Length: 234
Ligand SMILES: Cc1cc2nc3c(=O)[nH]c(=O)nc-3n(C[C@H](O)[C@H](O)[C@H](O)COP(=O)(O)O)c2cc1C
Image 1 (tube, rainbow, N blue to C red):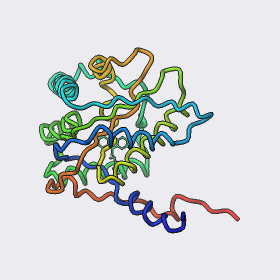
Image 2: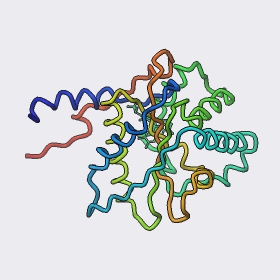
Image 3: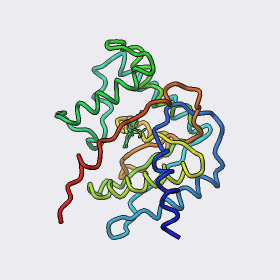
């Protein structure tokens, strides 16, 4: 049975990509529950299942978008206020080195290139950044938190859960975009969603049906070949 299914699983993994323009078509609540249920089969150290997920739609979604877009706009107009919005853990390195810096640039300019954004066009970059906080128009936002007593390993566990969510969604024709962009706005998100003080925002996911007519969704992201990242010993 498994021999026959690997092509199907590979197909779903290969077809998932980050979607940054969604249709407003809603997703059935039962479908979201099904996706989260199967995704919670993710492994976790000692099976502690450290994930907690806030599923945001409707008016809560509107309120959240409004507040976080306002906060991001405040930072854009008053950069000194950026200190008010700090992520609780560092997702990216402080100092970028090769080969990561080149890959990051390739990705960033690939996206901006599609959108016709050129170097120095700060207003257009800000507009694209704001798209993150509009969930790229996706009808559903998933906000993953971890209890603050947990360590880095639990974030690994949650990341496995997150990948499961994106794959289980894709297998149902639903697209996604994982987003670290929300992390600096943890306090605002916590306020709107009544997230307890002992939880921190780990990652958000926009979830919905891709708007295939939007050029931003044509971004193709390369991967380095297996020979470059895997070392085989015998
Ligand atoms: C944890 C995580 C956070 C990410 N945060 C963002 C984000 O805030 N905004 C965004 O547009 N893309 C974000 N991405 C998407 C990456 O840019 C994307 O996964 C990468 O370029 C590979 O492209 P693909 O997902 O289409 O295969 C994030 C990806 C991951 C795994």
